[in-house]
Image 1 (tube, rainbow, N blue to C red):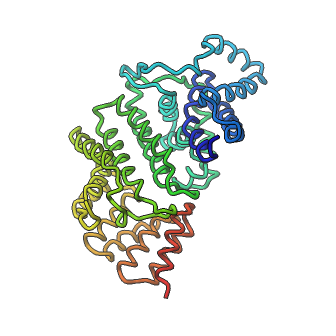
Image 2: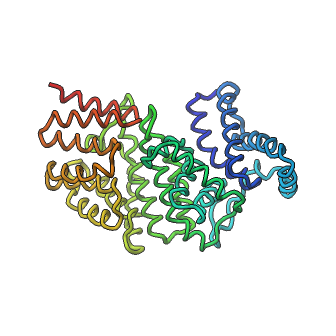
Image 3: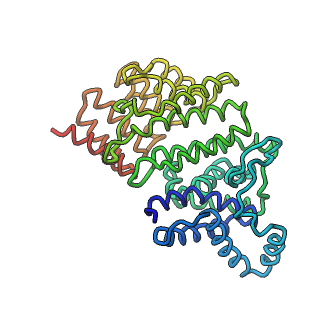
Length: 415
């Protein structure tokens, strides 16, 4: 009998695979997602008590299919379509393990599930970039609407409407592997979604745990699959390198009680050196493939952190130089906040504060800005200001480990 947490991890892993299988067969994205959610709820109730079935993915697909068929058959017009589609599909098409490889736009790629096809469907060129990202985070990443809204700094109701509109717009779109032209058109959105899924896994925006390992692993797995499709693409290699170099620190990010351990205090002997080695090799390869883009530059920054034996050995001038290029080609506020930290490490905390303060309007309500300001105010010798900023950051975050860490930093500055 498995613990509830283990069952939840298993369900998160299989959810996008099951949704992909249903959309491939029935072609109804919205009701398919509802049916999958019903199957997941049934599994969450039954599996902890009755045990996990030998083929959990097949169990979920069978249950979700029954729920979806019942729903579709309530509409006479849909019933005929569904029966015609079912007649064309072998009975065991969804419970038999798929073949090792399938053709993907003229390339070859593993087809261990339908998640990659679902990923590219959600990044349909008919959707606006914001809608592509939101829909994919919901369907493939398994994030809640609230988590997606928090990541994009918009109200939950706004994000719910965005996702609903996206589902309606791709209704009827073929669930097939994209041709090479579509790969190029959808790749930027796919990579951004994978990056966001990884970030949510590496540092969860809400909840009791700092790390949602299953999301981070799934993002890495999917990025490896995209890389097999496009082995010479520098952005893909750069993103995979960034994920590996960042995830390599996971074991050292939390203490015995799950408390957050900041980068400069981590035990670097606990970092995954195999992942670091692979990531650095990928960075070097990615930078050879052409002009450096945002993922390559962020991966190069991560590599400089991971190569330093101690925090004090970090090559901050080189990191600042990379951030200067990054914010010039991709002026995104979180990248600029990272640059503010690098400025502080090279030119002093007051210089870093000036950079961070310039982002107040663009990062209003984001706890990371207050957390950075608190750290820099503490280094600059302003304990009262630092304490206020730590408390503001703690109040704004939905992550309990981050909140506890920030409250702890504030408490150290009392008196």
